[in-house]
Length: 222
Length: 35
Image (cartoon, rainbow over all chains, first blue to last red):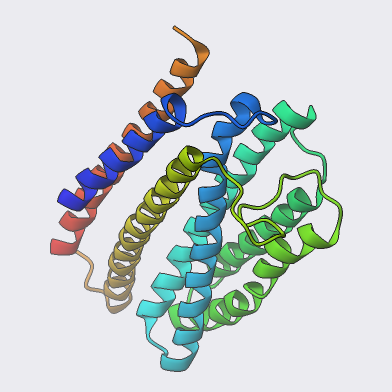
């Protein structure tokens, strides 16, 4: 419980710091603050989808449903954070570019990523038998993750994009005001903590669901 | 009150509500695990 309370205070404190302590980037103006939520959400997306891929491979190796629970939970949460990154990015685009959606390379890439992982969840929901579902979903997730670095890191760098430089810019440096950097990395850490909390909760729910499925299957419900 | 403070208050409210929801969910899951 102490860990939860610390997370609550940590994120709340850095939200306040983002608004009252960190300066604005001159070009971005008030929209600077979007980066404190948009980039951590995008980071958690990559982290979660990577977690899903690792546990998918582990499932294929060990055939332990615990890995399937981890992989499915991570893909769901990754997709959720991907939606947060997309929506916050669209709001930022409206303020800076004048339109919510411009089919910029980054927007197009994230759109494909959303489709790929929405299809993963559709695949899972279409199969009732747990082992079969786990096996097919694991193969899909392992292959789908190949597209993540390609869509997030490669495509936006190949084509011209209006999107600002990534945090680690092409010159290999983090060009940020020190106060912006502190708030940004603090919220990145906070979002990572939030991800692992939600991940553990979702896995626990999946275990309970699996136990109930087994009871239903053996006719011991009630 | 400036627009900035309103946005900050909304962000804090959203975070507080999400946290409260997750704590409630965690308690509910713990109950289900005991059954």
